Image (cartoon, rainbow, N blue to C red; front, top):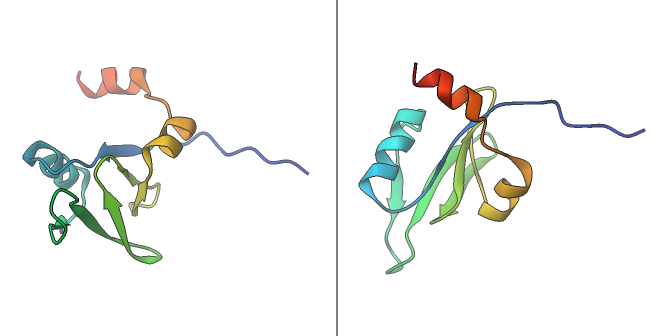
Length: 94
């Protein structure tokens, strides 16, 4: 048998080490935004997920799942899997 993924709309923010990105992550609901700067020019974001602690590097997308959980996704996988739901973005601005 073959299966197809159900249509699901998710919220996501692309992580960059900038105040605007950190604010957007907080607005998304990520409670403790923990950025590790141990390696210069390579900040990582630590995220508590349902599977335990995961890390995201700059450029990764942080996705809020259907049950309110968070997880990182590499940009190439994100681009292959998701597309912008433009009509929903328009409704949010009304």
